[in-house]
Image 1: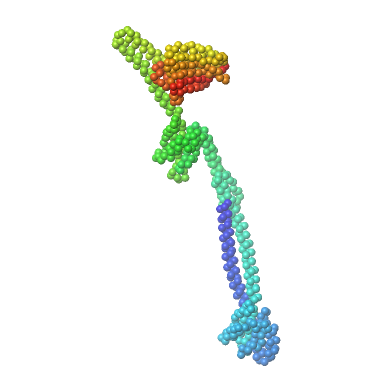
Image 2: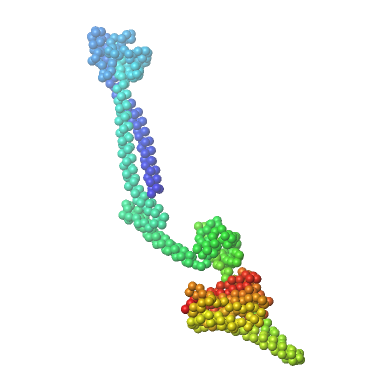
Length: 570
């Protein structure tokens, strides 16, 4: 719209300038030719008057008229319209003149006219008297001189009036032509304005429809083509918007973070997962990822691993395709938190190593002792008996390890092992206390029972599995509590649940050990773990997870540990 208005303005200004030039030139020419025409008309009138004056002067020279009759003939019968006469003899003496003509012959005007007559039969001049310009003509004959004149004041007024009327007429004509030109130009530019406006809206992504009945065949063809293009562009833009929105929803739904930057390092896109993984825009993780994205590498894709404290982030970086002919491109990174995967990988590695170690140790002992017995290297009966006992103990240790591994596998694959029943927690605690009392006394650890005065309400769970979990906790307390220490098995009521706990005053665990306590084959103090496979707490956690129960662990180095869990009441 602006472009078409500007073009129309330029056309109108060109018309205005053209009209102004034409008016000025025509006005100047008209004024010039008007002056010549006006002077020629007055000159002809004065020549006629001069002829009449000559006749009167000749009659006077022949004696046909007296001096008084000559004056009467000059005033006013011989006077031309708005003009005057003067008659002179051959001696340049004034014979007669029109009343009021004397001022026009003041100065040297009369002398100049008569001097011109010395060489010519007639003379013409202009004089100015009292602000009025007059036209004078003189002729000489044998009888004397005749001078006729006419003031040009009327000519000046007529010239001004003529020029004024001419200028007004030309201005009115120019204004009319300008208005007609503007109207015709606007009408002629209307299709261009409509097309320009619609093209601008089309460039902004709007779907437009041009009227196809515009004047001009070419204009109608352009309108049809623009309508087709508008429909095609609108469809393409709609599809692009749909794909963009779909892609945005997909990216926002990913658990992996997506972070893209342009060639200048500005963020193009960042989904919610990336914000959550990086913790904001100024964290060490975000700065490390941005540094990886800005790396100048020759390859199109590369990986980066970022360690932020206990977290490990994996970034798969790829270059964005070039756009608009630009050589520099941005980059995009797929960000994943692989902390758990790294931990599981280490766990798997340690798991295989631990199984190999746990299996190899008893097998090596059994094989060594058996080879000694086979080769007859042990001759004393007491030594042979001791060797047999060690072989049996190592076999039992190997059997416990295999049984624990089978137990873990069974827990993960046998849902029937968790059928629930109504259980009296008071009887369960007493039974577990009686069953383990002798074991703690043998270790020299005081084993206490903690129950409230009022009977605890019944619970709904699997009694065998609860007993198995409590046994694991008690074994752990017995192994890691030195002689003279104390271990407590108890239960207490909570709102809608019963809390079971095993507490000891043993060596305790630091924060890192607490975090890894339930991993397979993890043992905090190997010096205190001459018995056990390192799978007990893993089995306990697996059992309680199957029962939708979580374990609480409280421990500190040198201050003992407490394992507890909540079972809902029946």
